[in-house]
Image: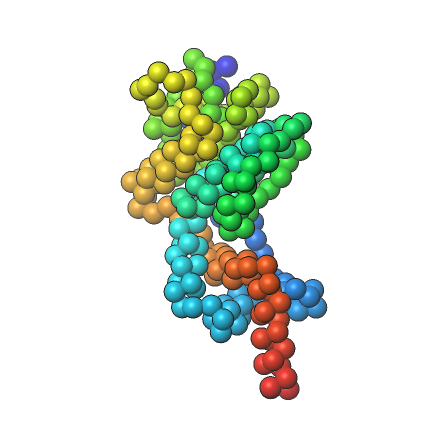
Length: 266
């Protein structure tokens, strides 16, 4: 049991420190950018941006650049068995706004409530990894060098302020009604909580996620002076992927621009 308390945090930090940084966790290709036809795949992210600049405004491209510069994979999110798709959408919106790029969803809830909030639009700017059960997700995250912390109240729970968020950390949020599963609590390196002063017993899961993401960002800025930590190659690739995700028709738009150039310069 002690491994999920302060001792567990120290052990997890040491293990994460041995892996180092957020490198190697970038979920997208660096040199493959398929358009709407597999026969047309660009290999250079700058070529994607060059074509996109013929259609997108300079302000839009600058916004993509700023968003990529603020992204990190050193902090990631796990949603275990959420019932309300609107809550998933709200977590994605907060994650995107605060630079958390990857969301892991464990689809262990037998029934889901479909909410109008599910179409928030934030998810297309993120990487979403789906899992059918909890253990494989947590085991993979640990193998990738993450310290896994579970939002759960127990005698061994520590406030989020006691963590060093410069260490690669995956934060698991449980089901809206039942909370994190016993399996998730057992597999986690530590249990954490967001401090509360009122009489209510918990935050809505999307509110809790937003508070954790914001605290993680501020902690990382205070400790190391930056939050976004992608390499230059990763940032360039992410901007290219953002261009392709601008809207559903954009890969076809870029292919048509490319074909037009090829016909003009045989």
